[in-house]
Length: 288
Image 1: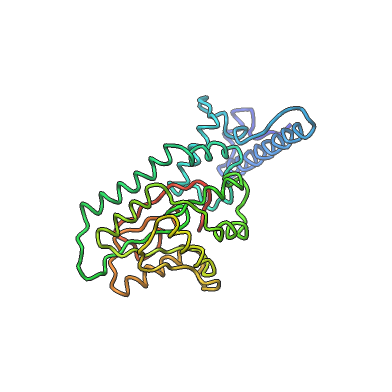
Image 2: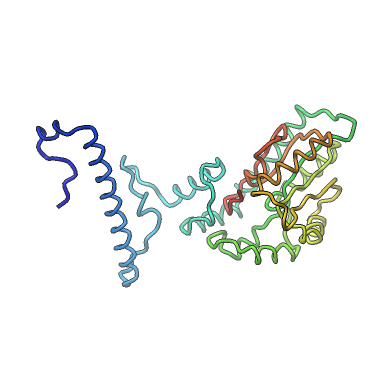
């Protein structure tokens, strides 16, 4: 029997604060061990054919306040916190959430969410933009899951439940079959129509330039000022640093960056900033 605290109230009063902390640590460790043992026993029950299916709700399904949590609650919360940048550095969508995420990416709600990004971008330009007349007003777009949709590829890997393989992803990109992200093509051409220069900054590698240009044109994009891709060995630590350095280069040439649209926080963060950033929802993967 494990005793975490004395049962006798008089004995409890004799315990020092240090002893209380030590007991608290022991208690937490004991509870963790018990939890791990419970998980192991549940897994073993499945392996032995007892018909039990373990999922994430075994950890979080019963809240201390007694309200409970459904699988949909959990997955919707996970998806929201990806967008809030609270969930980071994940390699795959939780297996229990694959079906919910896949339905979202094919849903009218996802289309409405992307439409909102386009509407807010347009509203910002209507209220704040004034053409400088010197050809230095600029707007930046990402490529993957911003202008072009990789959802068909992620269907093949079960919507992110399997870690994306760089070789297979680049093979998909080289096929040049990615469709335009709905509503982004219209936004792209509206921004061009207002006289801004379009810069496309992507973490795709330089050897994919021909495939990327071809796919963009096939999807209905044209007239950009520059497509900036990564060299195979460019020395940057991560996508965020690479894209921030490209914005810095544009600013050094006198461009005024009015906006950036991307599906990853790494496309939007770092200095210098554009005047506004707009993020397209993407619960499929995380790029640092």
